[in-house]
Image (cartoon, rainbow, N blue to C red; front, side, top):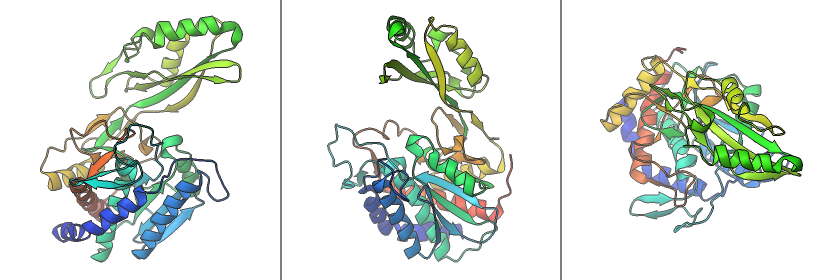
Amino acid sequence: MEEMLIQKIARNADDMIESIKAIVRIPSVKSEPLPQMPYGKAIHEALIAVLALAQEMGFETENVDGHMGIVKYGEGKDYIGIIGHLDVVEAGDGWKHAPFGAEEEKGRIYGRGILDNKGAILSCLYALYAIKQLHITLQHPIWILFGTDEESGFHDLQYYLRKHQPPIMGFTPDCKYPVVYGERGRCTLQVSADPAHYDAFCTFVNAYLQQDNGMGKCFDLEIEDQEFGKMQLSRGKLHREGEKLCVAFTFAYPFGIDAETIMRQVRSFLPDGLMMQCLINWKPVRFAKDGFLCRTLQSAYEKITGADGTPVTTSGGTYAKLMPHIVPFGPSFPGQKGIAHLPDEWMDKEDLIKNAMIYGISMLRLGSEGTYEE
């Protein structure tokens, strides 16, 4: 059955590539909300286009009030969830290729969102389509969830979880390979000052944020975890909120520390008169490396690539921060870094097809055998 699935995905590859290009050409950057379009017109256009494509394939679909789209296959309540997103960051400057042109050159497709995350999540759709074409009956239904606000705070997923129960397990194709069994926590703090304390604010920014080594050393937070690595501190940009000067900065923190400890430590370095608040805190995510979910995804990756699929960790942040029971899984292969969010974002056609095959085998195995393991 698995070999038949791989062959079917290969036969559908040309159609898949053309569909991905069509969706990449939609400039789905967040804009002002409109009725039934909570994240703006362009994102809504991308969502409607994908749901229309899935309906042409014969899938049951659901539009969750413009916040998320669902493509469903199979019967039952306890579903396997695959969640990616259609929203993209702004194109920015420095492109050699048209940001929303989906231009192809020597087997490589360029465009904002081709990697993050349209190419990956549409590879999942075509993998599920191949399962459907083969009339495979699964023990658990599979739902592919098309998010629309991953880049701006996960408001789409928060809305979804008020309407639907979470999956019993699944993955988000929005990170890297092999399967990621753990994500660092992410704590974003903002320090601000009114005009009377501008000098103290500038002293704090220069003495601590600008001088830090990127690992929290200036705040005595330079800690390291054997599996998750060192603390990472991302320095934010200065901005104004009315008369206040503000700076936001993010700690990507490993296991062994929590946001409360980080906040307490940073606050101990604040000059008098400065204010601090926590804008976001996503706790670390961790799964058993030898549990059913990670083992299944590892074996699917190894089957298609022939490479070592030992589970890894990441300092990134994905829907796994908020959606229970899912792990990050693909689409970037080892050695492919610094592509998303930069000019000339790309994916190779060969890798898109390989992703579809990995995801197809993963869905088949999860849907056929899966029982959730915490």
